[in-house]
Image 1 (cartoon, rainbow, N blue to C red):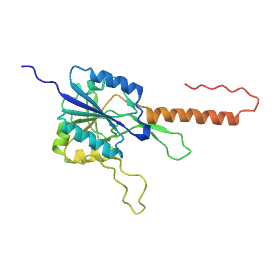
Image 2 (tube, rainbow, N blue to C red; image 1 turned 90 degrees about the horizontal axis):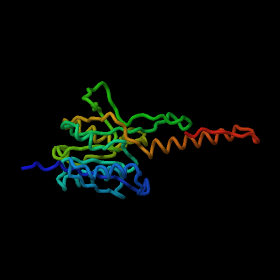
Image 3 (cartoon, one colour; image 1 turned 30 degrees about the vertical axis):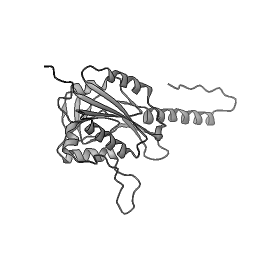
Image 4 (cartoon, helix red, strand yellow; image 1 turned 90 degrees about the vertical axis):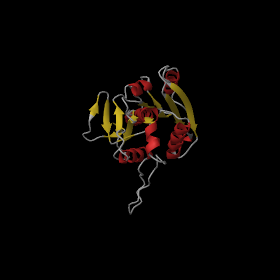
Length: 231
């Protein structure tokens, strides 16, 4: 008697933040995933569920109700150059896997953006194509059914700062989840391939090009021809 295929629920988060738009390359990823014969795949958009911690908790409860073996969450500005389910195939029982992406970070308003991976790691171990991390963003993340079976919701929560200044930067819902999962004995893993992050990286790069163009035009003599390399 043949064994049934593992069930994967794929949730794509889209909201008014990005006008319901989905990265065209992610659409291609979803088509590939939907035809992957190794798994029983169901794809569900999660639209206009805000704030984002609510949307992610909706994804987890949906996976629980559908008795999925694995939940794969995508933000709608992500995309991968590989079939993301290839990562799951070689996961070897890992319960929480994030596929890293780049985030922009600036020291001040006038500092050009620096692009850094959305993970935190301090001398943790590696395992083949995976490395253990303390925290990782949830732009693309696999969760095993064991997560919602062993941890009561809410799994994701945005926590406002509670210092005397009421600082404006909260603990984001993804890092809150990673801390919660580790408190319950789960390990957090990152795959060694990067996701493409249109919303942060490509838009930030375009902004940098536009800033360079504006500065060059301001500095050029009025009658001079200016050439730009926009690659």
